[in-house]
Each structure stands twice: as structure tokens, then as C-alpha cells.
Amino acid sequence: MADPVTLIGVGAIVLAEGIRFCYDQAGELLTGWRERRTARRAAETEAVTVTTPDALGGKTFQADVDPALVDQIAEPLARVRGRLANVGDGTLDADLSDQQLLSDFCTARELLEQVYGVRLTLTGEPAMATGTPVVRSHLQIERLTGRAHATGADIDEMNGPATVDTGITVGTADGDSRLEGVHVKRMGPSRREP
Image (cartoon, rainbow, N blue to C red; front, side, top):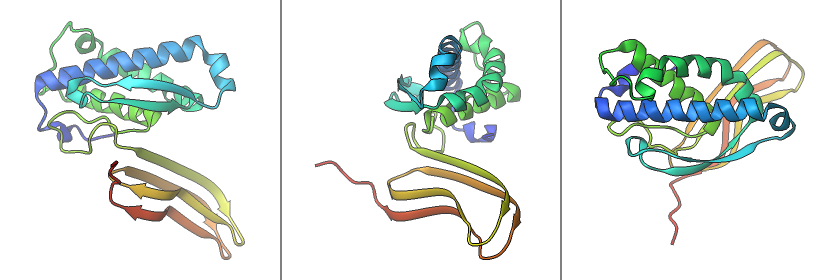
């Protein structure tokens, strides 16, 4: 979970707008997930268009939502959405001194980032901008033997800012087996469109 201390440069109005965004997005995601649960399980991904408020950069991005991932995060997302409800629906103002509120916002945002595959950054926050790609991979391997090779993330090309978060847990590795957290074939600066 993101540390609420990263919200130091964020004002109460920006935080409230960010909370409303997370609250609304969680509601849309969970409602759609519940209504189309059977059909979505048959599909590999569902394309969605997300538009963020000015407090999150005012960007529009496309995301391919994995229904299996929504199944995994639905319960914790519903719980944290409930705790954000009073600020999310405008009943209360955002209180920057409320550590539980800040923690709940960070949890909701992190869950949405997992589903959408991009960063969601508040204006004034010292982090990568909203829409920055995020790759998350966590492998749990019981036994790696012989000449086996496991890679947490294998990326052909990475241009510009991105977050790559990998982790590998292995019970036993023996023989000539090899573990790689991240393998990037080519890294370079952002390509600019002519």
C-alpha cells in the first residue's frame, strides 16, 4: 500500500476530488463486475475508457480490465469504498489530518491502479503522472529444478516513464535453474511523435 506521507504536497480540495474519483470508479467497476460476472469470466479482458478529474491530471486513457483480477480485488475494493463514502458522496469534506482516510484513499487508488494498469497521481503529489504505465508481476513458485528459468516481467521495449513492480517467491531452486525479476530487451527515452 502507498504511504499516505506521499500526499504531503496535496491540498484538501485535490484530495476530496481524488477520493470522489476513486469512490465513483470503484462503484462503476463493482457494479459492472456484479452485473456481468458470468459473461466477463468467459472474456479475457474488457476495454474501458477512464477520464480522470483535474485533480488527477484530467487525462483520458484506455484500459483492458481483466475480470479475474476484478474478482480478486472486489471484496477489498468494496470495503474501502464504503469507508470513503462520506467524502465520496460530498457529505463530508476531506480532512488531511485523518490518517485513516488517507490510508483508505491510498488503498482504493492502489487497487484501481492494479485493475487499470496505470498510475493515478494527485496534483501536487511527488510521483509519476496519471496514465504512466504500471507493470505488476508476482510469481509464487514451489520448486524450480533442472534448467528451468523464471522471469517476473519480460519487456521487449520500455520508452519513457513507467513503474515495474515484480516479486518472485521460490520454495526450492536447484540445478541450473535461473530467476530473473525483470528482463528488459531495450530501454530508451520517450519517443516523440512528429
